[in-house]
Amino acid sequence: MKVTFVKSEQTAESIQTFWFKPQSPVQYTAGQFIELRLPHPKADKRGEKRWFTLSSSPTEPLLSITTKFSKPSSTFKSTLLQLKHGQQVYMSDPMGDFVLPIDKTIPLLYVAGGIGITPVRSMIKWLSDTKEERRITIVYVTRSADEFAFIKLFNNYGATLIQLNTEHDGEKAHLNARRILDIASPESQTQIYLSGPEPMIEALVAQFDKQGYDQHQLITDYFPGYTPI
Image 1: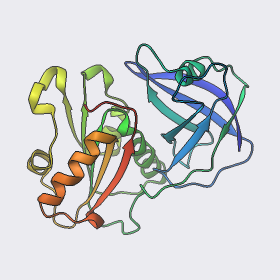
Image 2: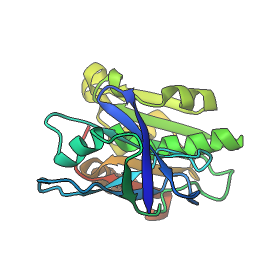
Image 3: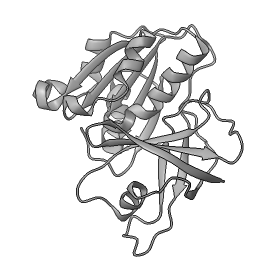
């Protein structure tokens, strides 16, 4: 589908959110992802397409993606930064099953590394706007305190928020399944959501398996192309 670029805004250090207007309202579920296509000359080997989890909520009229920028940037992200108001680009329909459970009584534990916080923002914004109460704990790790995003939203909703960053906490900020269980103390029926750089999530899935957690208790969102926190 075609979407029209509306605006961008700085969300945290080196992190930008981009807002797009669809031609007609889009039906999707909070936490789903899309593919964005940005044709541009002399594209590098990473190409003209990229997957993004939507950071927007279905309660919002615009669609948004939130991403981190490093130097040097890929040609894709350089093109993204240069979008002009009113410019049209191509976005796939939202998809994916990194979404809230139907049962509202299930406690939720989100473990987010860096930009892996984007689907959490989508879901918490949806819950906040619809005034739906759920028991939620968020373990959020970044490289520095400047990179924490959407904290005001999480606090206003009333989620239990545990923030860690490697700049301040050093080795204590590096997550493994045992440490997550120790600091979050999930109940036996808690649904655990793991979202972040692909190597980080692969390692956590293997560790949770050794802790006796089977696949139906873990929901994962892998972010390729990002280094572990």
